[in-house]
Length: 149
Image (cartoon, rainbow, N blue to C red):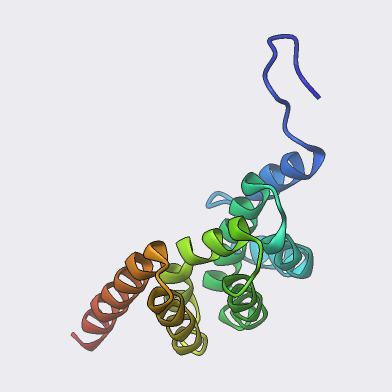
């Protein structure tokens, strides 16, 4: 739909994601945030392959929030992320590439797979995968150095 001023209104899905973002934000008790995010984990994971960029971005943001609050929730998220890195849909793949450095930090178990797929994409000439591979490697090294101090 379009508003009176001619701007595109958010889809009902995007509106729901924005409401979820508020309901799981910093001002909400941790146990409520964890419960809400865990109850939405599967639908959010499905949205990682959504064709619309705004919905994908919010799904990634909410899933990273869930992974930080409850590390076991990162496993399914990481599996879907790797699947999206291999997607034939360019926009889905590019979003996954853009979030790869964050994924390597959110899931230590998934980091080698994510880096391997980025390396393969980079070798095939994907410049955004090359840049993200470097960023992911640097942020991982920085994190490791901080942890060892």
